[in-house]
Image 1 (cartoon, rainbow, N blue to C red):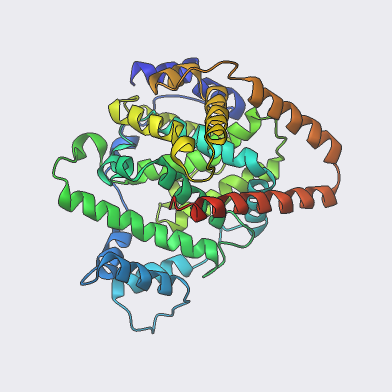
Image 2 (tube, rainbow, N blue to C red):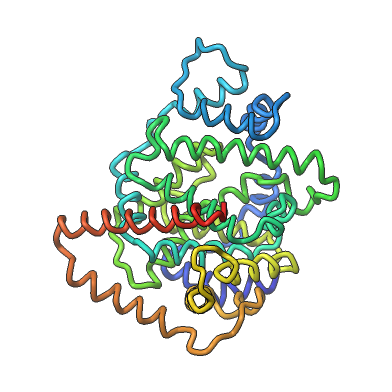
Length: 388
């Protein structure tokens, strides 16, 4: 294990995750990552080749958008790989617990802007510390497209798949999962065909199952830990609901069920084994982190310089509050004055607010309703600003 990542587990956020989750960390199964990094969504790739055969990207994307809105049967006339993929995604697994899905969706929504802070300033920023995970972003041109686009795309995807009933067959979240699965496959095929410099021995297959599980853990374990750090009280059902929600999303994206965690203990143990084979931040990591840090300055969400600068300061404050000091230093996050003032104020406000509204189902549902409104509004503002 890279010494810097070892420090993460001994003194940084990793140590917090172990204490919080009750995980039992060991180095058993040393081939865990070696096996998973060589595995990827073969079925998705076969279908993507059919979608993008003899079509330009826009034509192919329009076709898969149309199909994502359609329930098909085994008798439909479609290329076999596309039919197999869609029938697999339409098959609702027996393990699916809709009450847990609802609980996970409710927490995602009621956490409001806290959720967006955790996703941007903890999950996304913290993920840049893992050099190998970032390579697919670099080879698909994420640096050139800019952080604003990645924020917009990620926020749009997250708000769609975490809404109430969003993952019902052909509903909006399901459609987003379907299209994202095909974009993953298209990107993987493109990298393998056009970039002979891809270091398969070190990094594994592009967008492999190990890295997809790590990304899912960013949306579940790291997300929940961020909310915990910001003072949100989360029920056991809500917590399990978030993991169940992302387990189903992972299933729709083609990840084998056995690789997906059910709770924070399992997720922390999986995350540890994954990080054991990662290298800590390199030059690409620092460039991606710097682009994300400065996203507020180049985004079109606000027009006035003082608004952009203040939002930039706020996000940098939350990065320093949520991400451990050593990781921030590796990623070369800018040092600012009074970095913990606004995060601590938000945490105090969250704690007080929950004391006022606790114990009432009506207040809980109102929090879900209002959180959904603000999250969707912010997502639409990013799309409207032309960042997508």
